[in-house]
Figure 1: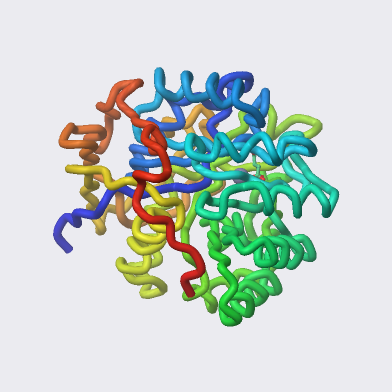
Figure 2: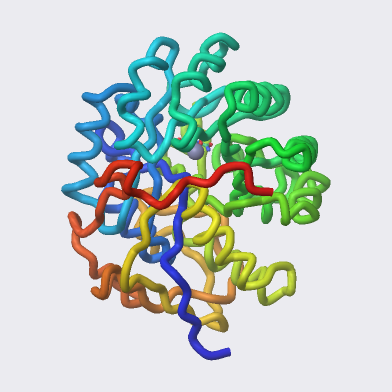
Length: 366
Ligand code: NCD
Ligand code: ZN
C-alpha cells in the first residue's frame, strides 16, 4: 500500500505531569511523544501536582504549555469538592471539566452525590464534561448529566457491562459519548505478561469477555484515546506502583495493525482519532496539518526508544505494522519519522479564542 496521508490526530486524554511531576513527563516530552505518534492535538488532564482546580493553577499550567508544547493542546479543569460554582467562568479557557468518580492516580476523587449533581448543574451545557466513572458510578453520572440537560463523555471504558450500559443510554437518546484506550482492546489482565507493577492501570485490565464486548460494540465507541499516563520504571518497580501506561507513541500503530488484520477500517480510525474528538470537544481546525503514514512498515516498540520520559511501554516487543513517517503542523515539518522538528512553544492552545468562536459543539449524537 502506498503512503497514506491522514489528518492530524487528536488525543482527548493525556497526562502531561508538568509542573510538580516533570520527572515523569513535561510539556516538551509529552508533545514530542504525541507528534511521533501522529497526534497533533492533546487534551491534558488536571490530576497534576498541584492539581488544576482553580484560575491560578490553570494560568500556571497554561504558561508552562505555552512555553514548552510542540503540538496543540487544551487543559482540563478538575472537579473538586467546593469549586463547582467558581469553575463555570473558566470554561471558555478549558478543554473541559474532568470528574473523577473512581480511585486512581492523584487526589481528585469525588465521593458525594451532591457534588456530582452540583458540577453537572454549574458547568456550562455547551462545554465538554468528561467522567472517570466505572460500574455504578457510570450509571450515576449518565443520569446526573441527563437530568441537568447536558452531555457527558465517558473516559476509558473497559468492561462489558459498561459498554452495554452506554449503548442502552445512547439508544434512549441520552447525550453520552465515550472513549476506549488501546490497552483495554489489546491486553487482558490474565494474558498481558506484564510484571505486577507494570500491569497497574485504572481502569484495571479486564477479562477476555470484556475485551470481546468492546470490539463487538465498536459502533458505540466514539473516540480512541490513549490515556497516556507516564510513570518512571523505578516507580512501577517500587513498593507502591502508580497506575498508568504511556501510550502516545504506540496507539496509531496498534490501530493500523488491527486494520491489517481486518478488525478495523482506516475510516474507523480516522473517525475515532480525528472527526469525533474534534466534534465532541469543539476543537478548531488545524490548517495545513496532516500526517504521513507507511501502513506496511513493520516495527516493534522499544521503551528505550520512546520520546516519552517514561521510557517503557506495555507493548514492548510486540510486532506492529504501520508507522508515522512525517507530521506537518500548520505547514511546517513537525516530525520526520525519526526526529521531532517542531520546537517547544510551537503548540497553540485550542481555547486561545473563546468557546463562542469555536466550531459549534454538538451533543447527543448516536
Ligand atoms: C492515570 C494517571 O496516572 O494519571 N492513571 C491511570 O491508570 N489511568 C489517571 C487516570 O486516568 O485514571
Ligand atoms: Zn487518565
